[in-house]
Image 1 (cartoon, rainbow, N blue to C red):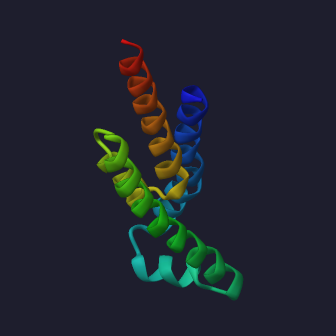
Image 2: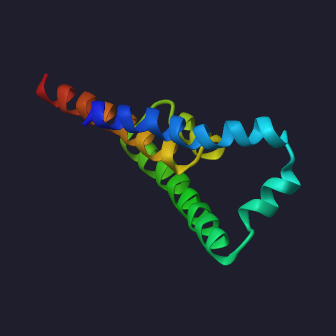
Length: 110
């Protein structure tokens, strides 16, 4: 699963930024235009609100679950969620969680 989550983390960065970087190069850091285009119609607003709620839930999950099982560097997937989105934050957190679970299992064996 570590490799699966690792690949998804890379895709979670690459795929969104393949669309975002050309937009930035065409329009610059025009926040007003970005928000206007993102909320151009009802389906766009639906998608962005869905992503926003998902990001809030994910950050809460990262904080709670990360603390509960003792994941170090849990701030990294939080930053990933805030800067890229759920497409990076979730698989990155699951990767860190998988690594931590392996450590816990290894410690129980010894």
